[in-house]
Image (cartoon, rainbow, N blue to C red):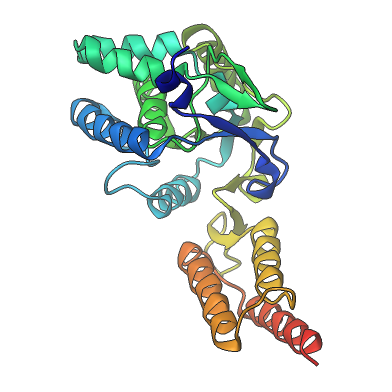
Length: 309
């Protein structure tokens, strides 16, 4: 193995529990500066071939698409009466993607042996774990600028199947849900998609986290759905920030006010402002219970005062 191959996309162990509540430990791909530049260039060129063919209900990592559009579309489906939701969690998606399927899909459109050779090298770059290199035969490197596009290329096959069945659905990266009007229909569709993912894409699903949800038990991109409780709006729902999202905000505020951090008061206030503005901007579609937000602000303020007495 030459030095160049060893240097491409060296991986390190990364604990996903810090980013995703209840998630499993995963691996984060860390490409070198040159490789990151090359992967970004290849990604931009490939996008020109695939982007126009992607379905409109795919919102993840695409130009002029974002989480807020996905949330609004989901809310629209629910308020139109599609309230039996097939919620499918792909088990360790980025660690399970079969290389041969992604490469074949690229080859079908891009007949360039050099490009395919480069992508294959990046995908199969050995993983550095506990000082030892392990060959990788499946999975996409999380952290690579090329991985979001490759995941969309593969999951576009699923999108095409959902469109063929004329279903109401949305997808944000590997997070997707299907909206139906009855449990019987949801169960039938869920079984069909399970078989499709297993046989056509060789992707396993997490049975413990997948199931048929009602709006009040359904979570999407850090949001929950609750009734509007307005007269004449029976069966209508609105977005709110989930409990885990509030807890995440509190953890960030607690971290920013740690006395052990050598920061001036001005720097600390700037950091707190960044956290608040970032959080409020992401959850701007949700009905923010101002009493809850004020309670969180007071907790952070009291914690800050106690630590600096």
